[in-house]
Length: 469
Image 1 (tube, rainbow, N blue to C red):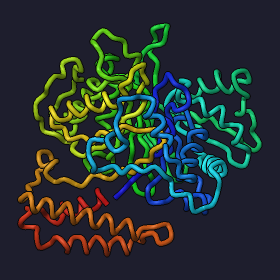
Image 2: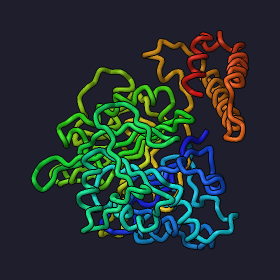
Image 3: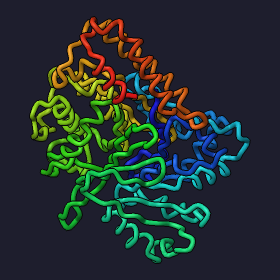
Image 4: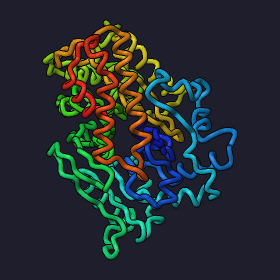
């Protein structure tokens, strides 16, 4: 069952302008056509705004006119040695990639659709105030209007940066001063609380502070990762701003995030992490300016894996010591890691191709089983939830499973019931508690005959039901 639909308005880390970081997130159980027809506002969330309306219009132009060479392909054609669209992910499972938003039938022009979607996207989360993450927030604001006010959320340091250095009546008009009706609100999220903060009727978030290198004054520059929950489905996605490894920062900010998300990953409530990997692997003394390489990203994933397996390992990994690797016990099999913020290079070889190759090699060498996907500007990604794997948590939950065939049967049955639930649980006909209880009983009865083969108890199955559905 798909959980989120992620449209990439910009995935570049520069230095070319025009397609820098921005993604549009919506739940997968409502279409863009339904959002536009019913004027549903809170389903769309914009994460960073290095790009927005311009690239959205390009995407819609490709869809409406069926352009033979799409925006995505045009950007890939800037390199002579690149990959095809379908080759920018590790495998076919977990993520569906598409090029259209399904809006041709509305009979609207690309520009009409762009303005309409922009009007309904009223919630922004900004990871930090660097221009490649906020440029469109200023340029696009001429289209906001008092009928469609925007709420822009960020940590205090980010909001102060936007207020003091962009919306300051010098670089850009201070639109935040228009109070009646509210035109643009810059809203500070509480930091370091590890408590969910509701940002609209559909989403709530927990912001985590990240290290993103140092200023020219040698002070640390801070960024943000947002753990976003769809309140209706209780599914999560974790989206990082620019970030460096704990090893490079000599802090443990990333480690604290991995510890926090452990129960969400283990219960299938978090299946996708969007994170940067700006450059291919470099020499040890080459500066990274607060970013990740395949080696340092993989070191972070190994730390997450250790936490999920409860090995007691609390230290960060040394990214420079990652070599050929050995097969390890993996708690990350099937986890979607979506890569963004790749910096363009003066080269015939697409750096995205190099980065994916290096990540896949590490993935094979360590047997981690992660599903890497390179985010491409102009594409939309539907991410799937993780199938519950009883064996994965055998060590800590003291669960004894039966044969592989039984495990496959159990996972398949659970997946089928999720699909059925998703079909019945719609906005027009939402579940009542009575209907939910009926489905729960049917689910338990459906596997009752195989309990002895699985070695599972009814209590465990009920717990599985509640955690996964």
